[in-house]
Length: 281
Image (cartoon, rainbow, N blue to C red; front, side, top):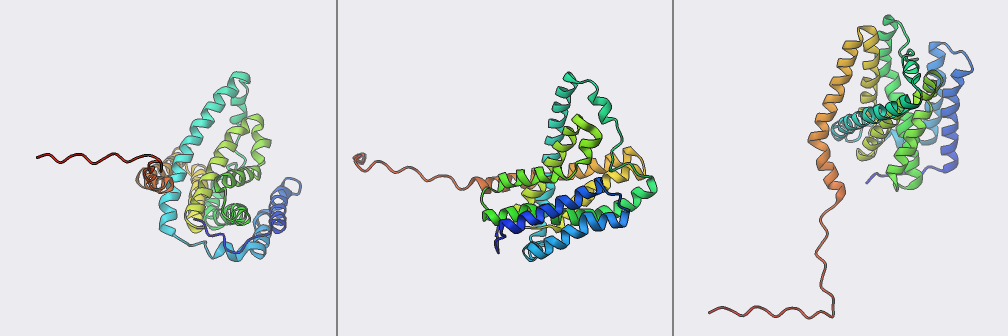
């Protein structure tokens, strides 16, 4: 059971959400340099999140690291494969109605549209800034805040809601890929959901989630810094390790959540018990 700790008020939670979305979307209307961009997009929301709910988030951040690593990689591996399969099916449907969707997906990824030299720097930033910052904001505050408000109830539904909000802050995919962006958003929601499940199961761990998030983003930039093949191999290794963890650790966790077998149903009170069998001589 996830410990909700000190409850968060709905009003303060809404304030935090407004700050997060405002800080993220301002970059679409105002030109920000790299340093100022990170300070606005991550620095301001993190400062507000720390003031509102920081103590509750940070006291759990390094909790159950081993559990978070095993389950986090496992859920990540399964959700990534499922997202790829669903995205492929959705893409086939879209192509039936609009063959031009394929041309939309051939547009450069706005995140990876950098030089190889910049990509090396962004690999480090993925681990040092982006992974920790986004997990603090989207799992620690956004999902953790919902858990606190609901006192840990309906956590699966809350994970879906917060994952959808996580995808919503990546609006640049909608601008770039238009209708084809549904493929990217499926993958974002799946990734966010995997991190939410791990956050809940581990009791609020953020350290391992930040590392998984950082490694996932870094594998994309590695493909720019070197070759797409090397980046694809790195991403494939991460997913493979995740699937291995899923095979080893998730079945046991799922069995725990199904609960013990139900006790046998007692006979009705008005039913006369059967007489004992006669002894054989």
